[in-house]
Length: 95
Image (cartoon, rainbow, N blue to C red):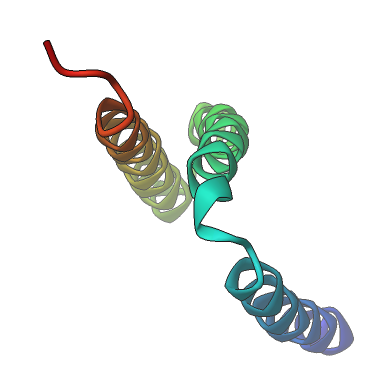
């Protein structure tokens, strides 16, 4: 149990550094397509959160954490699509 927690922390820290390095090297022109791809991944996270929240368990803490995951994933998806739509509006021609 203890080893799996340390491995999880190690993977999280490594993913944070790699993600920061990758995102910081993305040109400004590619931010909109990158945001759309991230929103698709967040949609998958939302499905996983719904599955986790809907598990048949008697543990109330698991249900509360699952509900929180669904709420936060939904906020992430909706907010991401709103930001993407707003960025795309900047590229439309005005009459």
